[in-house]
Length: 397
Image (tube, rainbow, N blue to C red):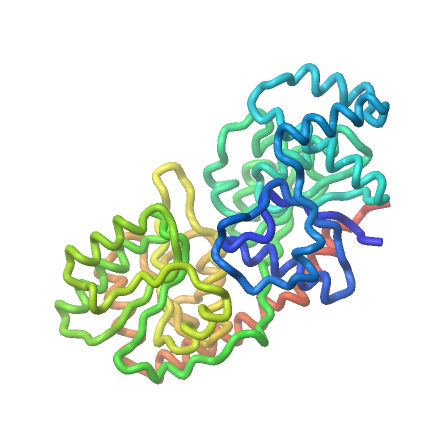
């Protein structure tokens, strides 16, 4: 029997490969948790998902069918008076579907004899899990990531109530662990840092032999990734007479704006936006790169990167990293040891860091090798998933 179930907002999701890897490693270790997904990730780029996992995902019905299903359960007296009263009292207030989703999921967890559910992000799935725990003798936990804790959205069941009700709160970095413990001191003992993990054997090894040097960046085309600053840095590299190519992989709302910036700066032959690519294609490009750059910046509302998976992937490839001092990034990228860190928005320093790494191949190799060794120590998916299971299940009856 599975020790716990997963509840995701969307699974598997192209932009959340760390969630899929976590589940896949549990399967590899012989644990096959039931997987519930509120939304079906249709119309996403193709990915290398294992059909044995994807076919096991239980997608929740959409609103009309969901309400009918819960009403049928109520008529059959499968719901307690407490659940029915809560549904009636909440009515059609904001986020009312979370209560119906909780009733739907909770009934199925009870039937399966599962008494704990784990969600990723302090968002829709965690809010649904909150109500599961209110309605049923089922505890919940969640993994907190980045904007969901640094710039949480304003819901009635907000971050404070999620942290207060969760049996365990997992987060990705020492930085976010400290952030949560200081904000919620009464729950500090329930907050635990567990790094995301990688199957390090999947990654090739970069030899940094690209001529001209290839700069690779990967991420959603959104403000906090700082790609506009990378494009400005590329324009300065041209002014400095440097030879290079730059590829920024990803998709997002800023794509047209970034393309316009590239054209305005006359960089169309040097800077490419190839779009989103499957994992195996990204691994190939990382292995052929000279440096990985992610110039993350804070958002005006407080959102920012915490533990960008793409940096972990680049480190697993043996690439030197250029990034910024923000969130948990300095826990991965040790300045002048596994890469070079600059302050957010400092484009001149960003240029200097890229030049420093690409001008001296031996330095790049040294930084990349140290990064690979650090990835081996910190980001083993096998070790980190075992720690997750132990933490989630600690103290349960």
